[in-house]
Length: 245
Length: 231
Image 1 (tube, rainbow over the protein chains, first blue to last red):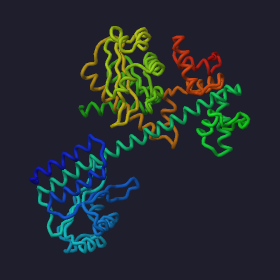
Image 2 (cartoon, chains in turn green, brown):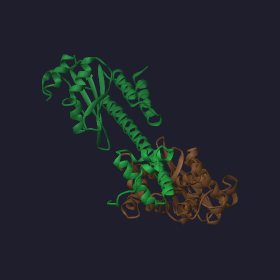
Image 3 (tube, rainbow over the protein chains, first blue to last red):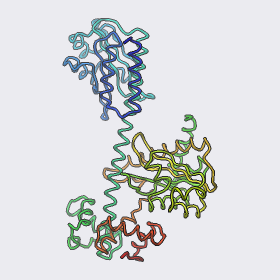
Protein backbone atom coordinates (compact mmCIF):
# COMPACT_ATOMS: atom_id res chain seq x y z
CA UNK A 1 0.00 0.00 0.00
CA UNK A 2 1.36 3.43 -0.85
CA UNK A 3 2.12 5.81 1.96
CA UNK A 4 -0.69 8.10 0.91
CA UNK A 5 -3.18 5.25 0.84
CA UNK A 6 -2.07 4.16 4.30
CA UNK A 7 -2.47 7.70 5.61
CA UNK A 8 -5.94 8.01 4.16
CA UNK A 9 -6.89 4.65 5.63
CA UNK A 10 -5.61 5.69 9.06
CA UNK A 11 -7.60 8.91 8.99
CA UNK A 12 -10.75 7.11 7.87
CA UNK A 13 -10.37 4.54 10.64
CA UNK A 14 -9.98 7.28 13.22
CA UNK A 15 -13.01 9.10 11.84
CA UNK A 16 -15.02 5.88 11.99
CA UNK A 17 -14.47 5.73 15.71
CA UNK A 18 -16.56 8.88 15.98
CA UNK A 19 -19.68 7.21 14.65
CA UNK A 20 -19.36 3.64 15.87
CA UNK A 21 -19.05 2.31 19.36
CA UNK A 22 -15.34 1.67 19.68
CA UNK A 23 -12.58 0.61 22.03
CA UNK A 24 -10.47 3.71 22.49
CA UNK A 25 -7.34 1.78 23.51
CA UNK A 26 -7.59 -0.42 20.44
CA UNK A 27 -8.04 2.58 18.17
CA UNK A 28 -5.08 4.44 19.67
CA UNK A 29 -2.87 1.34 19.56
CA UNK A 30 -3.63 0.97 15.89
CA UNK A 31 -2.75 4.64 15.47
CA UNK A 32 0.67 4.12 17.05
CA UNK A 33 1.34 1.15 14.75
CA UNK A 34 0.38 3.25 11.76
CA UNK A 35 2.67 6.06 12.88
CA UNK A 36 5.60 3.65 12.80
CA UNK A 37 4.64 2.68 9.25
CA UNK A 38 4.00 6.22 8.06
CA UNK A 39 6.99 8.04 9.50
CA UNK A 40 10.67 7.25 9.64
CA UNK A 41 10.47 6.19 13.29
CA UNK A 42 10.70 2.99 15.27
CA UNK A 43 8.21 3.43 18.09
CA UNK A 44 5.20 5.54 19.01
CA UNK A 45 2.88 5.94 21.96
CA UNK A 46 -0.05 7.94 23.24
CA UNK A 47 -0.27 9.38 26.73
CA UNK A 48 -3.56 10.71 28.06
CA UNK A 49 -4.31 12.73 31.16
CA UNK A 50 -6.22 10.76 33.79
CA UNK A 51 -9.15 12.14 35.79
CA UNK A 52 -6.65 12.63 38.64
CA UNK A 53 -4.55 14.88 36.42
CA UNK A 54 -1.51 12.71 35.71
CA UNK A 55 -0.29 11.56 32.31
CA UNK A 56 -0.54 7.85 31.61
CA UNK A 57 0.47 5.80 28.61
CA UNK A 58 -2.65 4.39 26.99
CA UNK A 59 -1.29 2.84 23.83
CA UNK A 60 2.09 2.07 22.29
CA UNK A 61 3.41 0.37 19.19
CA UNK A 62 5.50 -2.00 21.25
CA UNK A 63 5.17 -3.79 24.56
CA UNK A 64 8.95 -4.02 24.93
CA UNK A 65 9.99 -3.26 28.50
CA UNK A 66 12.36 -0.54 27.47
CA UNK A 67 9.55 1.37 25.78
CA UNK A 68 7.10 0.83 28.63
CA UNK A 69 9.76 2.21 30.94
CA UNK A 70 10.24 5.30 28.81
CA UNK A 71 6.57 6.11 29.16
CA UNK A 72 6.53 5.49 32.87
CA UNK A 73 9.34 8.01 33.21
CA UNK A 74 7.33 10.50 31.22
CA UNK A 75 4.74 10.75 33.96
CA UNK A 76 7.29 13.17 35.43
CA UNK A 77 9.67 14.37 32.73
CA UNK A 78 10.21 14.20 29.01
CA UNK A 79 8.79 15.34 25.68
CA UNK A 80 5.21 14.26 26.53
CA UNK A 81 4.67 16.22 29.73
CA UNK A 82 6.48 19.16 28.17
CA UNK A 83 4.25 19.33 25.12
CA UNK A 84 1.19 18.56 27.25
CA UNK A 85 1.86 21.64 29.34
CA UNK A 86 3.07 23.99 26.61
CA UNK A 87 0.57 22.96 23.95
CA UNK A 88 3.42 23.07 21.42
CA UNK A 89 5.19 20.20 19.61
CA UNK A 90 8.40 19.20 21.36
CA UNK A 91 11.32 18.02 19.24
CA UNK A 92 14.75 16.75 20.06
CA UNK A 93 16.60 15.76 16.95
CA UNK A 94 19.57 14.35 18.83
CA UNK A 95 19.41 13.29 22.45
CA UNK A 96 23.18 12.76 22.38
CA UNK A 97 23.75 16.50 22.24
CA UNK A 98 22.53 16.78 25.81
CA UNK A 99 20.59 20.03 25.43
CA UNK A 100 17.18 18.74 26.40
CA UNK A 101 16.42 19.32 30.09
CA UNK A 102 15.48 15.70 30.69
CA UNK A 103 18.16 14.36 32.99
CA UNK A 104 16.20 11.24 33.90
CA UNK A 105 14.47 10.55 30.60
CA UNK A 106 17.23 11.15 28.05
CA UNK A 107 19.80 8.58 29.26
CA UNK A 108 17.13 5.88 29.44
CA UNK A 109 15.94 6.74 25.94
CA UNK A 110 19.48 6.59 24.58
CA UNK A 111 20.08 3.31 26.41
CA UNK A 112 16.94 1.94 24.76
CA UNK A 113 18.39 2.78 21.36
CA UNK A 114 16.47 5.98 20.61
CA UNK A 115 18.25 9.05 19.48
CA UNK A 116 15.42 11.42 18.48
CA UNK A 117 12.01 12.17 19.89
CA UNK A 118 8.99 14.09 18.67
CA UNK A 119 5.89 14.81 20.76
CA UNK A 120 2.69 16.31 19.38
CA UNK A 121 0.16 17.86 21.79
CA UNK A 122 -3.35 16.45 21.87
CA UNK A 123 -5.63 19.37 22.68
CA UNK A 124 -9.21 20.25 21.91
CA UNK A 125 -10.08 23.95 21.97
CA UNK A 126 -7.22 24.69 24.30
CA UNK A 127 -8.03 21.85 26.69
CA UNK A 128 -5.07 19.45 26.96
CA UNK A 129 -5.97 15.80 26.60
CA UNK A 130 -2.57 14.13 26.15
CA UNK A 131 0.31 13.71 23.72
CA UNK A 132 1.37 11.61 20.75
CA UNK A 133 5.00 10.56 21.13
CA UNK A 134 7.29 9.39 18.32
CA UNK A 135 10.76 7.80 18.75
CA UNK A 136 13.50 7.41 16.16
CA UNK A 137 16.70 5.41 16.35
CA UNK A 138 18.63 7.95 14.31
CA UNK A 139 19.28 11.61 14.79
CA UNK A 140 16.91 13.93 12.94
CA UNK A 141 13.34 15.12 13.18
CA UNK A 142 10.22 14.96 11.05
CA UNK A 143 10.25 16.98 7.88
CA UNK A 144 7.60 19.64 7.41
CA UNK A 145 5.18 17.40 5.52
CA UNK A 146 5.41 14.64 8.14
CA UNK A 147 4.98 17.16 10.94
CA UNK A 148 1.71 18.29 9.37
CA UNK A 149 0.51 14.70 9.06
CA UNK A 150 1.48 13.93 12.67
CA UNK A 151 -0.51 16.93 13.80
CA UNK A 152 -3.54 15.87 11.77
CA UNK A 153 -3.45 12.38 13.28
CA UNK A 154 -3.09 13.78 16.78
CA UNK A 155 -6.03 16.13 16.20
CA UNK A 156 -8.38 13.44 14.95
CA UNK A 157 -7.31 11.11 17.75
CA UNK A 158 -8.03 13.88 20.26
CA UNK A 159 -11.54 14.35 18.97
CA UNK A 160 -12.14 10.61 19.15
CA UNK A 161 -10.90 10.44 22.75
CA UNK A 162 -12.98 13.43 23.86
CA UNK A 163 -16.06 12.09 22.09
CA UNK A 164 -15.59 8.71 23.70
CA UNK A 165 -15.21 10.24 27.15
CA UNK A 166 -18.34 12.36 26.69
CA UNK A 167 -20.30 9.32 25.58
CA UNK A 168 -19.06 7.31 28.56
CA UNK A 169 -19.93 10.16 30.90
CA UNK A 170 -23.44 10.34 29.45
CA UNK A 171 -23.90 6.61 29.95
CA UNK A 172 -22.65 6.72 33.52
CA UNK A 173 -24.84 9.68 34.48
CA UNK A 174 -27.91 8.11 32.84
CA UNK A 175 -27.33 4.88 34.73
CA UNK A 176 -27.05 6.88 37.94
CA UNK A 177 -30.33 8.64 37.13
CA UNK A 178 -32.03 5.36 36.36
CA UNK A 179 -30.79 3.83 39.58
CA UNK A 180 -31.78 6.87 41.64
CA UNK A 181 -35.25 6.92 40.09
CA UNK A 182 -35.74 3.20 40.76
CA UNK A 183 -34.73 3.61 44.41
CA UNK A 184 -36.99 6.59 44.80
CA UNK A 185 -39.99 4.77 43.33
CA UNK A 186 -39.57 2.03 45.93
CA UNK A 187 -39.34 4.58 48.73
CA UNK A 188 -42.51 6.35 47.57
CA UNK A 189 -44.34 3.04 47.29
CA UNK A 190 -43.24 2.12 50.82
CA UNK A 191 -44.49 5.46 52.11
CA UNK A 192 -47.87 4.58 50.63
CA UNK A 193 -47.90 1.11 52.18
CA UNK A 194 -46.98 2.51 55.59
CA UNK A 195 -49.42 5.41 55.29
CA UNK A 196 -52.27 2.99 54.59
CA UNK A 197 -51.39 0.62 57.40
CA UNK A 198 -50.88 3.31 60.06
CA UNK A 199 -53.27 6.01 58.91
CA UNK A 200 -50.39 8.48 58.93
CA UNK A 201 -49.81 11.09 56.27
CA UNK A 202 -46.95 10.67 53.81
CA UNK A 203 -44.51 12.91 55.67
CA UNK A 204 -44.92 11.05 58.94
CA UNK A 205 -44.78 7.73 57.16
CA UNK A 206 -41.49 8.86 55.61
CA UNK A 207 -40.13 9.88 59.02
CA UNK A 208 -40.80 6.41 60.37
CA UNK A 209 -39.05 4.74 57.46
CA UNK A 210 -36.10 7.07 57.73
CA UNK A 211 -35.92 6.67 61.52
CA UNK A 212 -35.81 2.89 61.20
CA UNK A 213 -33.16 3.05 58.49
CA UNK A 214 -30.97 5.36 60.54
CA UNK A 215 -31.26 3.48 63.82
CA UNK A 216 -30.47 0.19 62.12
CA UNK A 217 -27.83 1.71 59.85
CA UNK A 218 -29.61 0.53 56.72
CA UNK A 219 -30.16 2.14 53.38
CA UNK A 220 -33.54 3.78 53.12
CA UNK A 221 -34.28 2.10 49.78
CA UNK A 222 -33.47 -1.32 51.30
CA UNK A 223 -35.82 -0.70 54.21
CA UNK A 224 -38.49 0.42 51.75
CA UNK A 225 -38.05 -2.70 49.64
CA UNK A 226 -38.28 -4.92 52.75
CA UNK A 227 -41.52 -3.27 53.76
CA UNK A 228 -43.03 -3.73 50.31
CA UNK A 229 -41.90 -7.34 50.13
CA UNK A 230 -43.50 -8.06 53.48
CA UNK A 231 -40.17 -8.86 55.10
CA UNK A 232 -40.51 -5.98 57.52
CA UNK A 233 -43.48 -5.86 59.82
CA UNK A 234 -45.22 -2.81 61.13
CA UNK A 235 -44.36 -3.62 64.71
CA UNK A 236 -40.70 -3.12 63.87
CA UNK A 237 -41.32 0.48 62.95
CA UNK A 238 -41.78 2.49 66.10
CA UNK A 239 -43.36 5.90 66.15
CA UNK A 240 -40.81 8.51 65.12
CA UNK A 241 -39.43 10.84 67.78
CA UNK A 242 -40.52 14.49 67.48
CA UNK A 243 -39.13 15.63 64.17
CA UNK A 244 -36.00 17.58 64.85
CA UNK A 245 -35.07 18.08 61.21
CA UNK B 1 -26.34 23.47 12.15
CA UNK B 2 -25.16 27.09 12.13
CA UNK B 3 -22.87 27.55 15.09
CA UNK B 4 -24.20 31.05 15.79
CA UNK B 5 -27.75 29.74 16.17
CA UNK B 6 -26.57 27.03 18.55
CA UNK B 7 -24.74 29.59 20.67
CA UNK B 8 -27.81 31.82 20.68
CA UNK B 9 -29.99 28.99 21.90
CA UNK B 10 -27.45 27.93 24.51
CA UNK B 11 -27.38 31.50 25.77
CA UNK B 12 -31.14 31.54 26.16
CA UNK B 13 -31.14 28.20 27.95
CA UNK B 14 -28.37 29.35 30.27
CA UNK B 15 -30.31 32.49 31.13
CA UNK B 16 -33.32 30.30 31.79
CA UNK B 17 -31.27 28.13 34.12
CA UNK B 18 -29.99 31.13 36.02
CA UNK B 19 -33.43 32.56 36.62
CA UNK B 20 -35.81 31.18 39.22
CA UNK B 21 -38.30 28.64 37.97
CA UNK B 22 -35.44 26.46 36.67
CA UNK B 23 -36.86 23.66 34.65
CA UNK B 24 -40.08 25.47 33.72
CA UNK B 25 -38.06 28.17 32.02
CA UNK B 26 -36.26 25.50 30.03
CA UNK B 27 -39.55 24.48 28.47
CA UNK B 28 -40.71 28.06 28.03
CA UNK B 29 -37.50 28.84 26.17
CA UNK B 30 -38.01 25.80 23.95
CA UNK B 31 -41.49 27.03 22.99
CA UNK B 32 -40.21 30.57 22.42
CA UNK B 33 -37.25 29.54 20.27
CA UNK B 34 -39.34 27.51 17.83
CA UNK B 35 -42.23 29.98 18.09
CA UNK B 36 -44.77 27.30 18.88
CA UNK B 37 -47.53 27.44 21.47
CA UNK B 38 -46.03 25.18 24.08
CA UNK B 39 -43.36 22.63 24.96
CA UNK B 40 -42.84 19.82 27.44
CA UNK B 41 -40.03 17.40 28.14
CA UNK B 42 -40.89 13.82 28.99
CA UNK B 43 -38.33 11.89 31.00
CA UNK B 44 -37.93 8.21 30.25
CA UNK B 45 -35.45 6.00 32.00
CA UNK B 46 -34.98 2.29 31.62
CA UNK B 47 -37.67 2.45 28.94
CA UNK B 48 -40.24 3.53 31.53
CA UNK B 49 -41.90 6.96 31.44
CA UNK B 50 -40.81 8.66 34.62
CA UNK B 51 -42.60 11.95 34.40
CA UNK B 52 -42.06 15.40 33.09
CA UNK B 53 -38.90 17.48 33.35
CA UNK B 54 -40.83 20.62 32.58
CA UNK B 55 -43.87 21.98 30.88
CA UNK B 56 -44.42 25.49 29.51
CA UNK B 57 -48.19 25.57 30.01
CA UNK B 58 -51.24 23.59 31.16
CA UNK B 59 -51.85 22.10 27.72
CA UNK B 60 -48.29 20.75 27.54
CA UNK B 61 -48.84 19.29 30.99
CA UNK B 62 -51.96 17.57 29.68
CA UNK B 63 -50.01 16.21 26.71
CA UNK B 64 -47.35 14.82 29.06
CA UNK B 65 -49.91 13.44 31.51
CA UNK B 66 -51.87 11.60 28.87
CA UNK B 67 -48.75 10.01 27.45
CA UNK B 68 -47.70 8.97 30.93
CA UNK B 69 -51.11 7.46 31.60
CA UNK B 70 -51.71 5.87 28.21
CA UNK B 71 -48.24 5.01 27.00
CA UNK B 72 -49.05 6.42 23.57
CA UNK B 73 -48.37 9.75 21.88
CA UNK B 74 -45.65 11.71 20.06
CA UNK B 75 -43.04 11.61 22.85
CA UNK B 76 -43.51 7.93 23.55
CA UNK B 77 -43.25 7.16 19.86
CA UNK B 78 -40.23 9.41 19.30
CA UNK B 79 -38.43 7.76 22.22
CA UNK B 80 -39.30 4.21 21.18
CA UNK B 81 -38.48 4.71 17.53
CA UNK B 82 -35.43 6.88 18.08
CA UNK B 83 -36.51 9.51 15.55
CA UNK B 84 -38.65 12.69 15.39
CA UNK B 85 -42.41 12.23 15.16
CA UNK B 86 -44.61 14.72 13.30
CA UNK B 87 -48.37 15.15 13.46
CA UNK B 88 -49.16 18.43 11.73
CA UNK B 89 -52.93 17.93 11.77
CA UNK B 90 -54.03 16.21 14.91
CA UNK B 91 -57.73 16.76 14.34
CA UNK B 92 -57.69 15.15 10.90
CA UNK B 93 -55.09 12.40 11.34
CA UNK B 94 -54.40 11.99 15.05
CA UNK B 95 -57.08 9.44 15.89
CA UNK B 96 -55.64 6.89 13.48
CA UNK B 97 -52.26 7.11 15.19
CA UNK B 98 -53.13 7.57 18.83
CA UNK B 99 -56.76 6.61 19.36
CA UNK B 100 -57.07 7.41 23.04
CA UNK B 101 -54.52 10.23 23.26
CA UNK B 102 -55.98 12.36 20.45
CA UNK B 103 -59.55 13.33 21.49
CA UNK B 104 -58.74 15.04 24.81
CA UNK B 105 -55.73 16.77 23.27
CA UNK B 106 -57.74 18.09 20.33
CA UNK B 107 -60.40 19.22 22.75
CA UNK B 108 -57.77 21.15 24.70
CA UNK B 109 -57.05 23.16 21.55
CA UNK B 110 -54.01 21.42 20.06
CA UNK B 111 -53.76 21.60 16.25
CA UNK B 112 -50.35 20.04 15.65
CA UNK B 113 -47.98 18.08 17.84
CA UNK B 114 -44.34 17.00 17.39
CA UNK B 115 -41.94 14.79 19.35
CA UNK B 116 -38.13 14.85 19.29
CA UNK B 117 -36.07 12.24 21.11
CA UNK B 118 -33.61 13.45 23.75
CA UNK B 119 -30.34 11.73 22.99
CA UNK B 120 -26.68 12.10 23.80
CA UNK B 121 -24.81 9.68 21.59
CA UNK B 122 -26.46 6.30 22.13
CA UNK B 123 -27.96 7.31 25.46
CA UNK B 124 -31.71 8.05 25.39
CA UNK B 125 -33.36 10.13 28.06
CA UNK B 126 -36.87 10.89 26.85
CA UNK B 127 -38.42 13.25 24.36
CA UNK B 128 -39.24 16.90 23.74
CA UNK B 129 -42.84 17.63 22.93
CA UNK B 130 -43.84 20.71 20.93
CA UNK B 131 -47.38 21.71 20.07
CA UNK B 132 -49.18 24.43 18.15
CA UNK B 133 -52.74 25.56 18.64
CA UNK B 134 -53.27 25.54 14.87
CA UNK B 135 -52.52 22.71 12.43
CA UNK B 136 -49.58 22.90 10.04
CA UNK B 137 -46.11 21.40 9.61
CA UNK B 138 -42.88 22.76 11.07
CA UNK B 139 -40.89 25.10 8.86
CA UNK B 140 -37.33 24.05 8.03
CA UNK B 141 -36.03 26.59 10.53
CA UNK B 142 -38.34 25.36 13.29
CA UNK B 143 -37.33 21.79 12.55
CA UNK B 144 -33.63 22.62 12.69
CA UNK B 145 -34.13 24.52 15.95
CA UNK B 146 -36.16 21.69 17.47
CA UNK B 147 -33.32 19.25 16.80
CA UNK B 148 -30.87 21.62 18.48
CA UNK B 149 -33.22 22.11 21.44
CA UNK B 150 -33.65 18.36 21.90
CA UNK B 151 -29.88 17.99 22.04
CA UNK B 152 -29.48 20.89 24.45
CA UNK B 153 -32.35 19.60 26.61
CA UNK B 154 -30.75 16.16 26.79
CA UNK B 155 -27.45 17.66 27.92
CA UNK B 156 -29.26 19.89 30.41
CA UNK B 157 -30.94 16.89 32.00
CA UNK B 158 -27.60 15.08 32.24
CA UNK B 159 -25.96 18.17 33.69
CA UNK B 160 -28.72 18.41 36.29
CA UNK B 161 -28.22 14.77 37.26
CA UNK B 162 -24.43 15.09 37.30
CA UNK B 163 -24.78 17.43 40.30
CA UNK B 164 -26.51 14.76 42.37
CA UNK B 165 -24.91 13.20 45.45
CA UNK B 166 -24.38 9.44 45.05
CA UNK B 167 -27.62 7.48 44.73
CA UNK B 168 -29.82 10.57 44.59
CA UNK B 169 -31.78 12.38 41.93
CA UNK B 170 -30.20 15.68 40.85
CA UNK B 171 -31.51 18.55 42.99
CA UNK B 172 -32.88 20.61 40.10
CA UNK B 173 -34.77 17.57 38.83
CA UNK B 174 -35.98 16.74 42.33
CA UNK B 175 -37.36 20.22 42.72
CA UNK B 176 -38.53 21.13 39.24
CA UNK B 177 -39.53 17.90 37.55
CA UNK B 178 -42.83 16.13 38.11
CA UNK B 179 -41.73 12.60 38.81
CA UNK B 180 -45.20 11.31 39.66
CA UNK B 181 -44.38 10.35 43.20
CA UNK B 182 -48.08 10.54 44.01
CA UNK B 183 -48.69 7.62 41.62
CA UNK B 184 -46.16 5.48 43.46
CA UNK B 185 -47.50 6.48 46.85
CA UNK B 186 -50.98 5.55 45.68
CA UNK B 187 -49.68 2.19 44.39
CA UNK B 188 -48.32 1.49 47.86
CA UNK B 189 -51.59 2.44 49.51
CA UNK B 190 -53.69 0.33 47.16
CA UNK B 191 -51.28 -2.59 47.54
CA UNK B 192 -51.79 -2.45 51.31
CA UNK B 193 -55.54 -1.88 51.00
CA UNK B 194 -56.37 -4.86 48.82
CA UNK B 195 -53.32 -6.99 49.62
CA UNK B 196 -51.75 -7.18 46.17
CA UNK B 197 -48.28 -6.43 44.86
CA UNK B 198 -47.42 -2.80 44.05
CA UNK B 199 -47.20 -3.78 40.38
CA UNK B 200 -50.74 -5.14 40.48
CA UNK B 201 -51.87 -2.08 42.43
CA UNK B 202 -50.59 0.19 39.66
CA UNK B 203 -52.49 -1.84 37.09
CA UNK B 204 -55.68 -1.42 39.15
CA UNK B 205 -55.08 2.33 39.36
CA UNK B 206 -54.63 2.56 35.61
CA UNK B 207 -57.74 0.49 35.01
CA UNK B 208 -59.75 2.77 37.28
CA UNK B 209 -58.39 5.87 35.51
CA UNK B 210 -59.24 4.44 32.11
CA UNK B 211 -62.71 3.26 33.09
CA UNK B 212 -63.55 6.64 34.56
CA UNK B 213 -61.90 8.70 31.85
CA UNK B 214 -59.57 10.33 34.33
CA UNK B 215 -55.85 11.00 34.43
CA UNK B 216 -53.73 8.54 36.41
CA UNK B 217 -52.14 11.34 38.44
CA UNK B 218 -55.58 12.67 39.46
CA UNK B 219 -56.81 9.24 40.54
CA UNK B 220 -53.59 8.75 42.50
CA UNK B 221 -54.00 12.11 44.21
CA UNK B 222 -57.50 11.12 45.31
CA UNK B 223 -56.23 7.84 46.71
CA UNK B 224 -53.45 9.55 48.66
CA UNK B 225 -55.90 12.15 49.98
CA UNK B 226 -58.12 9.23 51.06
CA UNK B 227 -60.99 10.47 48.91
CA UNK B 228 -60.94 7.26 46.92
CA UNK B 229 -60.45 3.58 47.62
CA UNK B 230 -59.81 1.13 44.82
CA UNK B 231 -61.53 -2.20 45.29
